[in-house]
Amino acid sequence: MPDIEQFEEEPGGDRPRRPMAVAGSVAWILALIAVCVTLPFYEHPSLVCGLAPLVTAGVVAVVMGRVKDRYRHGAARARAVSDTVRRTLLRPLPERIGALELASVYRPCGGRGQVGGDLYAVARRGRTTRLIIGDVCGKGLHTFEDVAAVLGAFREWAPRAATLGELSARLEESFLRHLAETDGAVRDTDERFVTALLLEVCEGEQCARMINHGHPPPVRASRGDVALVAGCPSPPLGLHALRGCGAIEECFELAPGDTLLLYTDGLVEARDAAGDCYPLLDRATAWRWVRQDPAHHECPCLTDALGEILRDLVRHAGALPEDDLAMVALTRTKEPAAALSGTPGTVFREGTGQLRQD
Image 1 (tube, rainbow, N blue to C red):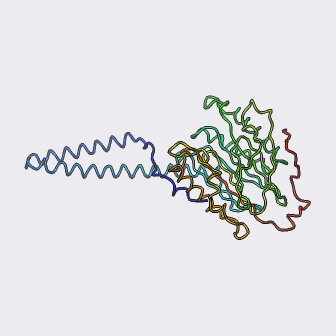
Image 2: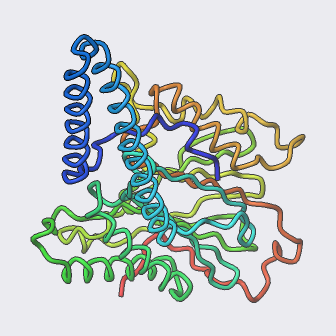
């Protein structure tokens, strides 16, 4: 995973309020000032004007240093807790799973020490790899419970669902149940939904399948060419009014050596000083790892590829976006000849576009 902290600005935000500590420090300062001013006055009145400012400045510097250290320790503890919570839900993706090489990057809104609404996860079912990337509507801590609900449902059903369509239906069912059980006073359930992209890659097949629940389409780099994997989007998870529309499965070529970039809207909605959004496809054609000749180069290092995208994003917007940002890059590697021939153990052979829902 690329080190996203190198792109971060200095941490800001409101400092934690410590009324009792501040009041005690102020009282201590005032007491010392009173002593320093009063005692010399009895013996050498002329020293008051000269010593009092120096002593006061020294005391203030010491006290402010202690307050700053306490703030730093408190902020460090808060970041540690936030990072632990985030790693518990957004578990690091493996560098390789099945026939795929993976890399990911995640930055919540507000930078390190915050939690966001973007999510991703990967799971295996037999010789099939399934992956999800999504974005919960909203920002802040209240979206994290929705993230936990979606990831929990994915990790439960991705290894069990027979088809990608069944997995989609299970996620919808689970998320609607989560909304029904959640206190409506926290947030209006009509405004709670999740855009998500489900991806399925089966070993032994030269194609991949996806169901797009209102999420930005992935970008595919194949033999030096880059294009969006467009399709017919399905409704986001959790929208009651559109529940009857169903999920539509798309099938597209993903040959060995092809690279796929999955991302959230924090990437494409990053704006420059003129207010223009990040032109993903236009910039993608200039990425070094996209322009490599696959006949003379090995598969790109995905960690370096994501780092190049982040640097280009910062050049465009001047800084990392204020919105949550998540990216997952994957490359399909070459498989043994036995796998490519299509063994009887291969799962998922359906090729229809419309999927049934339970």
